[in-house]
Image (cartoon, rainbow, N blue to C red; front, side, top):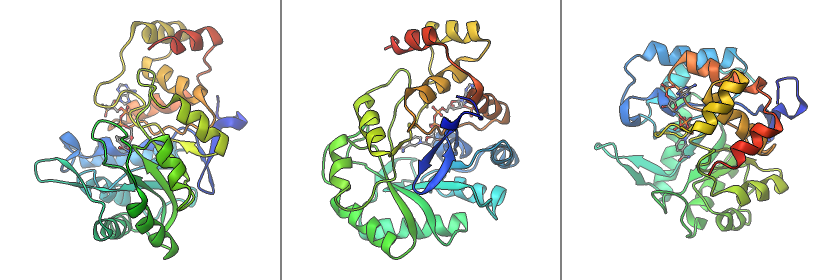
Length: 287
Ligand SMILES: NC(=O)c1ccc[n+]([C@@H]2O[C@H](COP(=O)([O-])OP(=O)(O)OC[C@H]3O[C@@H](n4cnc5c(N)ncnc54)[C@H](OP(=O)(O)O)[C@@H]3O)[C@@H](O)[C@H]2O)c1
């Protein structure tokens, strides 16, 4: 895929966005808690992202909490018309940095209003309901109650599109009976491919799949095959990991996270990295 390729965009809600966006979680302090060491550097990363063509930023008031959204507002408000900011609700941070479920009507309504205020918006373009039923990955269980609350907030005009995060195929299907689902955000990367069937299913519906931890998250991807392919192509392993995801399916939208302008630029350059078929095969076989 390159930026001149017609497949460089995909629909997110009713907006066409570049398939390579940016995830803002790394802009908070250590443990995704508190302020970053260097706030000016965080602001610079966001401004550089938008100047480099990023039109999709993933965030949440969980990050900090509130810190990341406040930095996004400081860096980018008033927002460019083509920028889609996606946030997520369903958790609350404890003072010990823990991540706790926050699924009551009061919690979810408060979270939408917090995001509106902290981002400086009148309406949130996409809100993902983040399931907290499983701590280490999706777990079955009903999302009907919280999703009904979010659909009510959508009817009130506070939310344009609804997505899901950390969910199973069955939960996506059940959710479609309550509201339209614009996107699904689950953990997926070269080394973690539990969602292969779900990605294809969503592609069939024209629904965006947004892998979190595309570079391995807290455990960055490492593999000799990845390094060999990268060396051969004159690219970095992270660029190859992103290019592989872009080739995986046209409905995959990427939100790699970084706190560094150098890494941001390196990651965005993966837009122009074409993986030859033998490299794809070697990477596909990596499990
Ligand atoms: N829905 C959910 O439950 C959920 C969960 C987690 C994350 N997310 C979202 O998904 C986004 C992406 O996930 P993530 O940020 O956790 O993980 P990631 O994108 O897989 O990896 C980020 C890590 O990779 C490093 N990195 C980035 N680019 C690099 C490069 N070119 N070379 C070397 N290291 C590089 C970053 O460090 P540096 O800062 O040093 O670059 C950071 O430690 C998040 O920002 C967040 O928006 C959602």
